Length: 256
Length: 294
Image (cartoon, rainbow over all chains, first blue to last red; front, side, top):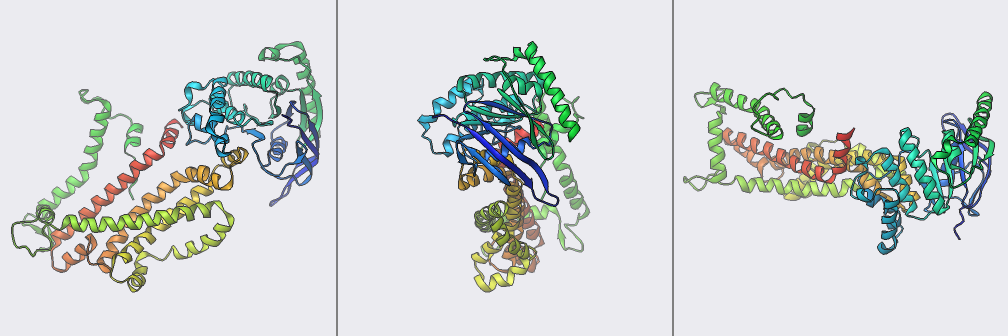
């Protein structure tokens, strides 16, 4: 029932314009139900483009892209996107932002209200219902961004460097929050990041990307035991993964 | 258009007078300082004007002194016990209301047309391609150039004035609205699409609110033009209102009434701009917070 399977088959993306830019080249990627996959790579390697294709914000130039076996043609609430800068509606307060999805989909108030309240509690913002986004810190805004997506019960979460703009300490608490939420929901997650630690800590599998054109050059399964917490960051296995990925990424850079 | 920077400017200014009396609260002191600063220039000019024309007028009797203007204004507003046929006795409010009503009607028509058209131009490529060139072609034609057209089509009636006001106010509103809709942050639209909002919902719940700051800029400029338009229209195309009185009083040599009329127009323009500003502060509360934070 829940599903959330993702299949990229030989997907390429070229941006046309004054000069053509080959953003993605021959992407093959299959993500199973409930899997947490991190896309890791330097900025400009096309990892956000890959996520935008899956979100339906952009169209692939070649290849096929399936979500739950169906070709992706447009954005939809089955794929909840968490943006880097949260992209909350600045004129709506926290509560209105969180219920925006169910509301525009025509869900009856009774059917989303208690769920939305519960989500605000989970992300620790129950007392900030009436606050406007501008009155919140970056971390709090991103909590709202996560809550509003979860309010739609998506089959997959697409997260585009969601914690990239946060300070180190806030980032850790957000990573912990995401681990906890994912542990209880088991939703498929595609997580774009340039932070090696973050990728190892969160994911079941890391796809390392190279730049221009963006390709997946390495896939590394992460078998750290679950449930994980930010305490895992200091384990010896974690450090071993990190050493290996760092050398992998250097190889990628030399070829670029 | 003068842009009010009142409360914001006073926040940013270094507190030059901070050593002054501490009896008043700092906010009250700031307000008082603001008012004092604001009236220095007009009070000085009026005083000089009064002093220069100590015989009751300047420029060989053409320009009456402020005390005479003030007297004429009082008679115009409240009437006098003299002859009942004086057109400048007790007719101030009626004429003011004629003008204000025309501005209100024309401005409302302008908003109702310009906001949807502006959003369409800013948001939709086809609408932009269809509407924008025509708007840009008509925009350089000043409202004064539309006067003969307006009189020919609507005659010497209210509709002509309302048409000119609506036309004049339309352009700044439509141009600013289109800019606001065009400049919308891409990820806000993407977020709405991702949450399942259809085109219409995105227009109403994302594009329109995101454009509101720009729309209000257009409204304030448009209202200024609306006051210009009503005076021009009443001078030529209608037989009542402040613009009509202005020209009429000039013809019979009543410069005291002319100046009182000008002052009335200025005050009405100022007050109506403040009203828009108040509405803007209320509607765009989220934005005010934003600008103070950054």
